[in-house]
Length: 325
Ligand code: KDO
Image (tube, rainbow, N blue to C red; front, side):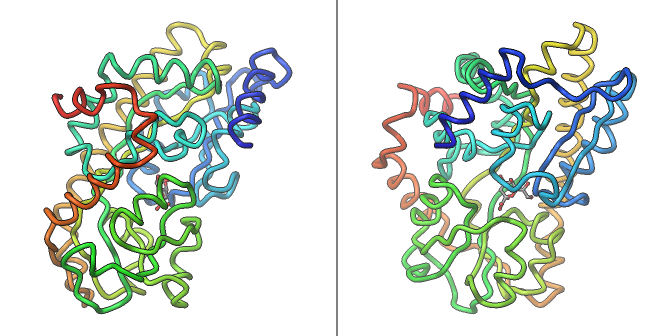
């Protein structure tokens, strides 16, 4: 449903029925994201992106999903109701199944690998399809970090078998639920903004996110352990309305592109530094932090993906091309 309405809305928008918001002589760039204002992607966009485009655009971020619910932002851009979001491969995969390749566990190796993959020529047709059919331009790749298991239960986790029956919150799309199952857990869909309460009340046994997110959203206050599975080197894409983009001059477009890349670079550096430092912070808070048998998780997860229906939608040969970068 979402796929067809979003794509149809984009077509209507392109036909000129929805217009981008202009405040006085400046373009208004509203961004909606479930990220907190202290998340490093948010900080970098506020410190770097906003000021860099201020000559012709007013950047208006709305954090904590205060403008649009998590997962509804792409459709909002397609309909001309929003100009920007920090989207994910999981969200894109709900509309364009081939994007599920980037939701696979243990595929991206690290932050640099993500950058190389995003810049690779084999990505061009995928990006172009999103632009043409959804009216969304993917400006740059933002590093979210290595996702780790963060549990309120005390049980020691060594292999996927130890997660049997564990209610693991994952964000609410099929691709995320599949990752939860591939890890061996019982995935429970839940919006990011509800996770703290879910952990506090015991509605869920755990969640997965990178260490900086666990600190920023204070999940350590309501959990007992972090299991360093590093099962997904997670990313987001900075999404921008194609309709607004098309209304900018060549010089303004170059400024927006540079501002996006610069913000992503700063966010990436800070996030990597935090990931290095934070294990000790959680230990100081009384949490156990340890590595399980990562090879056992890698094998289990990779096998699940290669045998899955998702893999049937992946462009032929792309896993090898990604691995070769
Ligand atoms: C989450 O819901 O766990 C997640 O980490 C998924 C990411 O794709 C991203 O959307 C993120 O939330 C939000 O930006 C909140 O930090």
